[in-house]
Image (tube, rainbow, N blue to C red; front, side):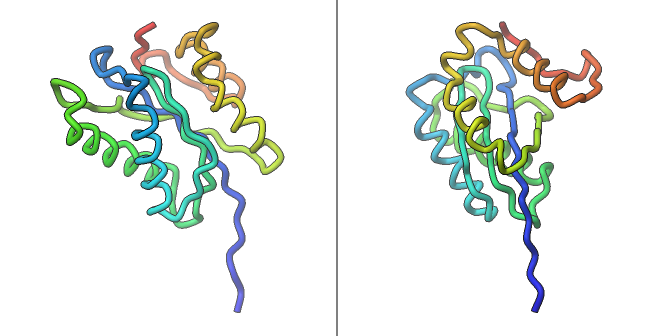
Length: 153
């Protein structure tokens, strides 16, 4: 009987909706574990995850039955609901509409994981806007400034 073999490595970037919803460092471990659980429930393999105050990077080996759109929707909706149940903020938490999704080959896994692990140091030098525009340009993605994330740099 034939099987399906895939190699689908995707890095997602989600941004918080407003500056008041910035993620505090003391939440990072729990938030990252929760989103890792979402990935596992979707039969995806978490390769790397890290966040700073205004955005998160999630790098997964995607199961072939899960599209980028489905993963982003479920990860964002479920984690928003979970954050709100934790009562970490005085108001309702939301991720911004949309997401970045960038695909990689197997030989790039190590460098992407290292990049994501180094987010806190990286953002001492670069703003989120600079980082995100670099991704869009590096991957040759045409974009309209009106439809980018709201950046709070």
